[in-house]
Image (cartoon, rainbow, N blue to C red; front, top):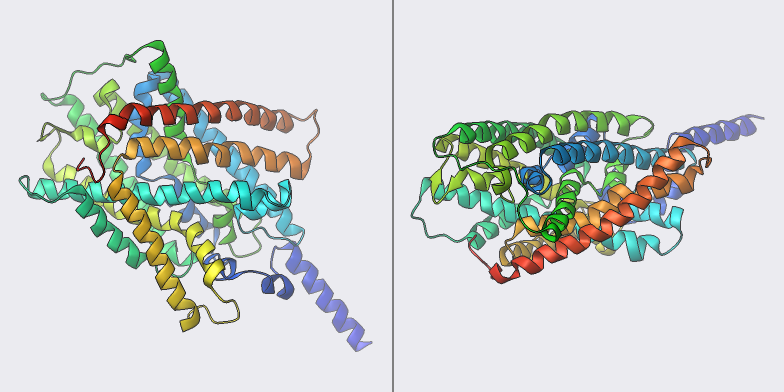
Length: 462
């Protein structure tokens, strides 16, 4: 009788663990080294909020005035507001699907796991996985390039006649990233990402203040809010602007971030998203509106570039220096967070779950292959220093389908809402509209690269 009672107690505890999304011993044994070592489920909803904020409120938001230049005032504000609402909604859809499967005893830790389980075998490996990898690694490249540009800007302020080239600064930033990339797990970044949250608020305030100062300066360029070019040029500009906004609000790693939350997971992602989008509203709209107000259709691919014209600073030197320092520091955190899917894949391929995470058997491959991945990203960033175009391609190719399309598809397949329900038709409308926008945005992004190709030079000092 005692044995029977003990067995019943064990079953009850297992049922509770399953309902809370805790992996059982058997399920844990089935995890590869990537999931077990990199995606450790130890964080709180607050840590989740830090990760989300770092992955979304990043220096890509400094491209928003550039997007407004192709849309104009009304369309720019409306598109940015709609994109914020839709991404908040879509990220919650993904979270609900993940929570539902966790309660059924199968916690999905990666985007490709969701794709395989919901869409069928092969979707994760051959479609969603490669897209996510390309997007995240592309973000690492873009942030490494921006890091080099920020370092160069600080150097030029301190030494205007300096001879160091952009690629040298990119390499310096890459070396720093190579060291930081050895942080063992996603969860271990939580304190770095708290600092990152403070930094993104700081440089957004500086950028907005700089725009207002420049706009009132005697040396301010003449502001023109018209959208130049032919009708064809303007049309493609609109879709390229969609891609830039999508990149700015893009994430692409919602499942991996939710995987860092300690069980039970229910409701924690929503709290994290609320924290994140409070920062989004406070920063995105102030930077976009102030930057476009100050520079109109002359807004550059990144707002910081507008603060210097022909070698002359439009804002105080100290403000420009501080802004670049804040950006530089946060870029390292953003690059780190988007490096995690690559780290997880590498750990899964070369790690051994039977050995301790910090054993020589696992530490040596981790050191070697993470260093190689950072070196590759740094080389690409140094060779192709055209962040504006890279930003558009990343958004069109990856962030639009991952963040605007997949969540609605996953939700409708998982929960099978009635065709008479509002949520079914909202999701269906999002699928149709963003399939169309994704195709056109890809065409526009590729077209923009073709137009700018004549100015491309390997290792250019831009």
